[in-house]
Image 1 (cartoon, each protein chain N blue to C red):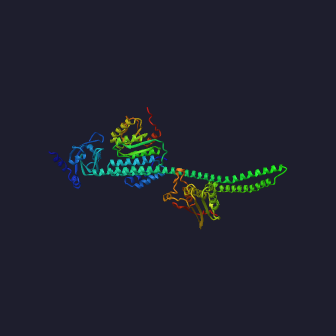
Image 2: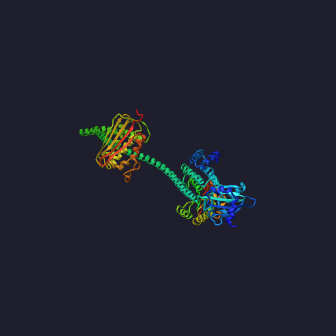
Image 3: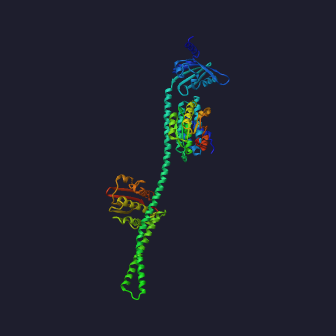
Length: 220
Length: 419
């Protein structure tokens, strides 16, 4: 199956989304699932693409922030409905914690990442948007994950991300970290190069590759 | 000239163009900005010429700063004004402040001769704050929903695993009950075989005595008669007991063997029930429990006789164990069979201890047992319920009173394939 969603079908989805019509959107998603499109394709080529377009429309003041929020929530609810039909992968005894950095209100990217981990059999703990850094540190201590993923959509939260990475590096020397999100498209990746055990994941393909080749960091 | 007078003069030059907008708007903040192109790229610089108090508040600084225009930003406004010329540059929600602390206002931006007049009509920051709160709550709701979906998926998987494990347990319990049935038959067959063996030993002894007598010159009449008597008594004893053993083997074949295969054929109901009672003889003969069977001889059914024998076997085991305290109490068991039109009714009752209402309510539940500590699996009556409802397509009810006994009422349609 190629990974290209028919442009007409995408347009139809996008128009319904922007007008707040959840059910037709759900039907289109269902149709695509029945046509054997995989989750990763739907996440990137339908959800991500449409939400990026919505963001652009908001930036150009073509739509209100309320419409932007509505489209986000519809997308989240579609993801939840899809989650009910996702196969439960064979567990591989690895745990990942996914969170959005402090003050970051966007959470869809993190959810997509969490779902991909789950499909690969990881025990996935998704914390959500705007995770206070200190609480995240305590939580990591409590659940002892094999990996932590941090999502950042708005570049202005780079200081919060750096603070979080610093704290995780100093508290958990051998804990691998992945970071990603729209903010990195504006060059944030160059600002995290100094952090230990930290990998920037630009898209879901790279994430799958990372999961496939994941290795624990050996003790020194 | 005072700045206010200067601005009034500047604004008067916009008339009547501005009047129309000002008169129809609910402006609480306004400011006048000038912009200029910077270099060859579409980059613009700008500064404020005048801002009223409202505008200063919105921009968050006393002197204002064009960087405080977030969406649309000053660059976008100036570029649009430069491209489109005089007129309305923007009409919508203007976000000002900083990315981290912003406010939103309904605004209009007008352009005239490289000047931008920003009119803020009303503050929608509160609305914006409420909207953000609502979004946060919605996100939380969404996350809870997601969590519930995941939990449900896990529970569904666990349930499927449990069902598979339960089927395995039921299968092994069926095999265990088959084992008990075999043990019962083995014990029963042991008795006639033992008698036949003793009788054949006596027969051999008598034959040897006669042989010895034949070698002697004189034979005592009494001795000869005694040996002949032994032969006379032993031979029928051997025949009768071997016949009994042969009958038991047939019984065993009908019940135990049938349990291990899904063999559908015509069988006689009375015969099958009787075989089960015989197979249980070893468990009941040392007790003071009577088993009475009332079943028409002629009822023949098409199906797997295992269903009936397993059903009765489990109920008899339960009566002895629970109703009559492991066979220590005195009492009776009645098995009554009636045919009415196309339905068969089996009433199985005992005069044992009976059960309380809570036990009756749970009696068909899998793994419910009052004797777990003594090794009860709690599957016997569950298997009975399954046999009646799934295999025989009928119903089974339990009625019981403490101190009075228990009755199971079974009803099922006579199978269509019945001859």
